[in-house]
Each structure stands twice: as C-alpha cells, then as structure tokens.
Image 1 (cartoon, rainbow, N blue to C red):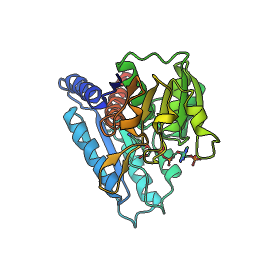
Image 2: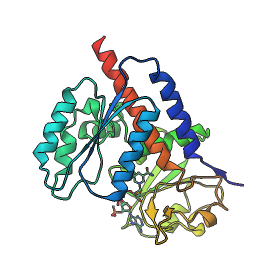
Image 3: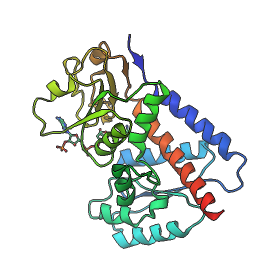
Image 4: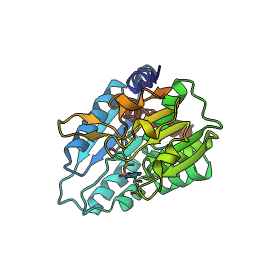
Length: 283
Ligand code: NAP
C-alpha cells in the first residue's frame, strides 16, 4: 500500500513551529511581496502567502503594480526594501507583465533578502555547493517533505522531468547534494517512459496534465508531483495520474495537498532564516 506524502500536514507543522519562534520576538520577520501581473492564479498565490505569513506571526507587505509600470519603478521599490531593516525577505511573484524584464528585476534584490533564491548569486552558490542565502522554495519543500517521511535519497536513482530555473534545475542540484544519482528529462527527451521506469524517485514538474501514467513508473517508486493545472471542470490536478500511479508507488504526493503547501512553508522558513542572518550580522 502506498503512503501519501501529506504536504499539508508537514507544512502546518512548520508554520506552527515558526509561530512559536516568532511569538516572543519584538521585531517580527518581514516579508515583502511584489505583484506585477493580473493573472488570477498569481493573485490567489499572493493572498495565500500573505495569510500564511500572518499565521506564522510575520509582518507581510504586498505591493501591487498595474500594466503601465516600468522596470525602474519596481527596481526603485526593491532598492527601498533592500535598505528597510524591517524587511527580511523580498519576493517577486512570477510571471510579471510581459513588458517587464524579469531577470533585471530579480537581480535588483539584495541576495541576502532574496527569499525565493532566484538571484544569480544564490543560484550559483546552490550549483557549486556553497550554502546560498536562501534555496528556492519548491525544491527545498520537496526535500523537506521526503525527509519528514524518513526517505533516504543517497544512492537512489532520481529522475526529474522539467528543467526550469524554479523547479527542475534546483531540485536536481538538491538531489545531487543528497547523493542521489540524478537524470533530468525535458520536452526533447526521447523515450521518456524508459527513463522514468528506472527511477527510484520520480519528480515530475512539467505542467502537462496527467502525463505520468501507471506504465511510466516502476513498482515501489516514490513519486512527487509538482504540477498544478486547473482542468476543464475547474479542479486542480497534477502531472501524475494519481489513481493509476498510486497503485504502484511506495510513496506519492497528492495534488492538491502535496508540494504546494510545502512551497509556502519553505517561503516562510526562508524568511525566518534571512531574519536570523540579519540579526546575527548586527551582533
Ligand atoms: P515550465 O517553466 O513551463 O517548465 C516545464 C518543464 O517541463 C520544461 O523544462 C519542459 O521542457 C518540460 N516538459 C514540458 N512538456 C514535457 C513533456 N511532454 N515531457 C517531458 N518534459 C516536458 O514550468 P515550471 O515553472 O517548472 O512548473 C512546472 C509545473 O509545476 C507547473 O504546473 C507549475 O504550475 C507547477 N509548479 C508548482 C509549484 C508548487 O508549489 N507546487 C511551484 C512551481 C511550479 P523544455 O525545457 O524542453 O521546454
């Protein structure tokens, strides 16, 4: 029988621990979120992040921009947030309005406040094996969830489907750090099924609904579904055909309730860690 990797439960416990840590603090960890996009899903994500930050006892600030905003207006705000001692984490909700320069805006964030771990300095540190100021939230959340279930990664064959900068590449780097043997597949990979069938751990991050069927997975594999897709009936589904695949797995994440809540929990955990670093720097 498969074990469900319950991201909601793990995330709630992380947030509760953070709430206990922040309760006695005079200065609370401060998270700033910049929203420059009118995508309804992004608005929901930002609202959820704000709600969970408050649950953890953090100060949370949301800055919204309309489609007439320039790169410089956002960069000016980031400059002010970089200098503001009450802000410890700055997050730019992606994607941005298409006229904006995503990379330039991310690079304006002080790497010490880059709570998403997207700044090239933090990305570079992750890939050369030096501790970054923060590690991207979704990949970090996946590793944390696997560890919460005492899953050993060392020596396992891990297959990651997807090579984006926010999920595929950083999760591959983290799996390598845990001494897994890692293979990254993507849309040009030939014979995907042959590769995925060799995986002890399969992490799918494509956004292609129900791409992963029962015959993509070996018996007893651990399957992590990162995909979040709204289907025609408005229901949230993932990359993995859960009802079929879960018959073969040893562990599997549900969608929703798997990786999604862990991403938010890691965002808050990263904010807390950056807050602690800023306090230690002053000592
Ligand atoms: P992305 O930037 O669009 O990347 C998708 C990746 O999947 C690409 O590398 C692409 O290959 C690959 N791919 C697409 N179709 C494929 C196929 N048929 N076979 C093999 N590989 C294929 O997406 P992303 O930002 O990484 O996000 C992926 C999914 O995760 C989305 O559903 C997103 O909503 C979700 N997500 C969830 C969370 C969470 O907290 N749960 C966080 C972030 C993202 P190429 O590089 O060759 O194009």
